[in-house]
Each structure stands twice: as structure tokens, then as C-alpha cells.
Image (cartoon, rainbow over all chains, first blue to last red):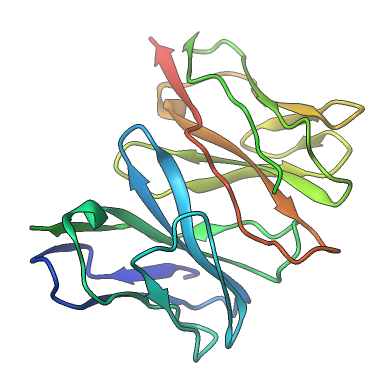
Amino acid sequence: EAQVTQNPRYLITVTGKKLTVTCSQNMNHEYMSWYRQDPGLGLRQIYYSMNVEVTDKGDVPEGYKVSRKEKRNFPLILESPSPNQTSLYFCASSFGTGGHGELFFGEGSRLTVL
Amino acid sequence: DAKTTQPNSMESNEEEPVHLPCNHSTISGTDYIHWYRQLPSQGPEYVIHGLTSNVNNRMASLAIAEDRKSSTLILHRATLRDAAVYYCILRLNSGGSNYKLTFGKGTLLTVNP
């Protein structure tokens, strides 16, 4: 089954404790991206990747890092989480990098930073 | 990067057609128009996309204005399961260096029984 898998789905952590949210897709997609969703602000893109070793900033990249060492994986790293990074996070992927590729989203990861 | 503008909310009755508008006045010639929806407590899901011509699929229809500065997602017969937030976004096809995506807040569609 084609899917985008995120882990963990739920996480409560404390300020400053490094964490990684993993994202994996089994569709051999080139494009992968991360979003955060906050009440009243909609979906905002954090980072995206056009292919292995090619990443770029979205609209809200501050406080986050990403890497794309393998095509299937695109982890989101919070080096020193802060309470304002409490949010619902989504990973998405699509075939190719052109505008005609439909995005497939994961089920989301709810992160709480105390 | 081109942005889209959608109404914050719309309301419809079950089994009636729904027309969800989206304005994208700064669209470039290589931008595809995509629509996604997000059901409560779920991740967004793809609905439909197009470039210039109107498009139909099993979920909906997409009507694109001739100047491409606006589009309308059409749900032909709304059901309670169509209650969701609908997002209209632009995806650059080629010829640029900025492939980031801006979703915005979308339109919250309420369907009344």
C-alpha cells in the first residue's frame, strides 16, 4: 500500500531536548516536505526536498533542520525544541518535482514541548 | 511565490452542489492549480489539479478561468462526508528555483443535513 509514515504520532518533550520526527515514503517519490499546522494559521511549509541531498527552506524554517540522505526518508530535526514549536506536523511526498504531482500526506505527528 | 486567496468558510446543504472559489491573480504560466482537503483529525488529501483546462474526476470538478487568475472547485452533490477544510495551492511546474508550497488557511466547508 502506498503510504507516507510518520513517527512518532504523539510526543511530549521538554524544552531543549533534541528530537527527530521521522518520515518515510514507499512510492519512490522525489519531492518530500514538512508542514506545521497551528490553530488559525493553516498549513505552513517548513522545509522541502527536491531529491537526495537537495533541500530548501519553506516559509517557517527557523528552529528546524532536515536531511535527505536516502530517497525514501526525510527526517525533521528539532535541535533545541521550544514551546512555540508545539504543533501538529505533517510530512508529504509527491512523484517528480513538477507541478502535476499530487501530494501524499502522512497522518501527522502531534508534538508538545513543555 | 504566488499566493492564493480563499473565503474563510462556506456552508452548503446535503445533496446540493458546492462551488468553492480560489483567487490566484499572480499565477505564472507554469503553475498548476491544486486542491486538497483535510477532514477532521486527518492529514490533507488530494482532490484534483489542473493547468488550463477544466478537469473532472470521481471526487470533484475543477473550473479554471480563461485568464487563470481564479478557479472553482465544484462538488456536484455535497455529502456530510465532504465537510472539511479545502485548500487551493499553486505548484510550480518548471522554469524556476522556488518550489515551496503555500497552503494558507483554506475554506472550512460546513454541510448541513
